[in-house]
Structure formats: structure tokens, C-alpha cells
Image 1 (cartoon, rainbow, N blue to C red):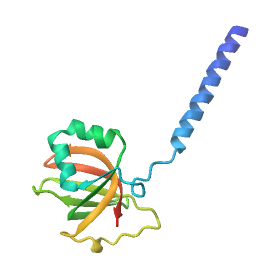
Image 2: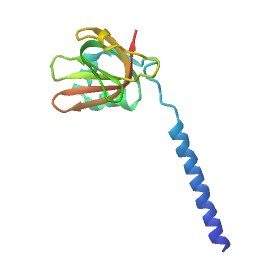
Image 3: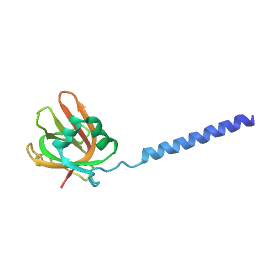
Image 4: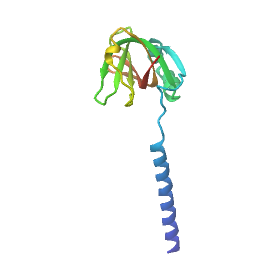
Length: 148
């Protein structure tokens, strides 16, 4: 009886500790990449070329290390997403290739897409999450903000 009581108490204690850790991780704030200092500043085409030539090294450098990246480039298109975010696509040499930057907007931020027409130069800071290849190649930037 005493042995089973001790085992049940240990299991209950482990469950409480596990729940506390889970709650802490769930409530942990997410890094604000748009407002943080840039770890890397480069042209969007240079970022794209790094992923195109050596994807593994680029992932280690930008994605795994959780670095803030500031890219500058020329807008090829913009899109308002269903979730209220805005994606700005930066032009590469091929029409099928681009760097996509999804802006994270809070209630205080208002972005007018008319202010960001095709062909305009823009600087965007955010988190690089890698490259995907479907029809063309796309380097994906998330949690972005437009930089001055």
C-alpha cells in the first residue's frame, strides 16, 4: 500500500512539473524580428543566391541560428492574406523565383498596399525560414516589418 502510494505521488509530481514546463513554453514570448537589431544585412538577391548555391550552409547560417535578417530589394508583387497579414514578393532574375516577406502586423500598424507598388525599392527585416522549391524557388521570410 505504501509503495503504490509513493509511486502515485511521484507520477503526480512529474505530471505537475511537466504541466508547468508546458505552460511556461506556451506563454513564452516570441522574438520580435521586425524590431530587433539585424544580424545580417544584404540584398534579397544575395540571400536568394546563398540558398540556391548551398542550401545547407544557408540554413545553418540564417534559420537554425534564429538570426534577424535585413534584406533590400525591388517589389515584384504584394498580396493581402486571409489571416490579415501582407506578403511582399521581392524580384529575382527569373520570374518564377523570389524572396517572400510576410509582414506581421499588430492592431497599431496600418500598411497601405498602394504605398508599395511593383518596382519600388524596399528594406524588410524579419526571420528567414528557408527555401522551398515548387514551380520556382522561393526564400521565405516571416515575422517581418518594413525597415526605414
